Amino acid sequence: MQKPAARRLGNTDNSKAPVVLITGASSGIGKACAEYLAAKGFIVYGASRKPVGEAGVRRLQADVTQAASVAGAVAAVMAEQGRIDVLINNAGMGIGGAIELATPDEIIRQMDTNFMGTVNMCAAVVPHMRAARCGRIINISSLAGSMGIPYQGFYSASKFAVEGYSEALSMELHPFGVKVSVVEPGDFSTGFTGHRIVSEATLNDPDYGARFKKCLRIIEKEERGGSRPVKLARKLYRIIRARHPKFRYRVGVPLQIIFTKAKAVVPSRGHQALLRLFYGVRR
Image (cartoon, rainbow, N blue to C red):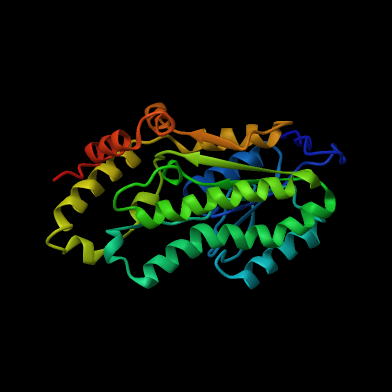
């Protein structure tokens, strides 16, 4: 039997396993992370719109874009456990296409899921952590949240929003012993690729169409050849167990991480030129 994990989360009873709530837990990275943490002895609640069975994970139905749904899910965990020690905001989706041709519905759907979903979850969980003077919030961003990716403009925008929101939240919650971290995954081999919504308007556009198709092939190739989700699960475990976690972590293929870090030292004109070359966005 797996030994319960110690709660190294503050001045609390360390004999109890941490209670973890993770969103987007029905597939991909979320599913892998939920199962991994459960196997490590954590009490894990996996939230998703259509919850499915995961080994050792307690299923929880919640739509992160709906504040009432989120509030109900959080209330259910609090009723059963009396606390939430770790919140992992992982739910997300992607829409590919030219920024110019994105419809209002596509933009709203992208931002509601990736950004407002994080906001809604934090709004429901933070009061409990603040009252307990203890807790960890881990917001899953992306390497695309530190640099804009062509034809993934609103996906990048949603992750940039998560980054800025998390920076402010971290400072505001610091006096109450609640620690906030952002994790920026690179490409991981999951079902995210197959579930991406592709803009038909962009595919059929005489100016954007060919370039978009070429760029999308590159993106999908990199994703399918990306890291295994368990790599991120191990990182989350170490973040939760850390006494003094960092604010930002990057996880993925080393070359992608190096390229992201280079943005801080390479002139912006040169960095964008490299991105255009990589993604085939040329004249």
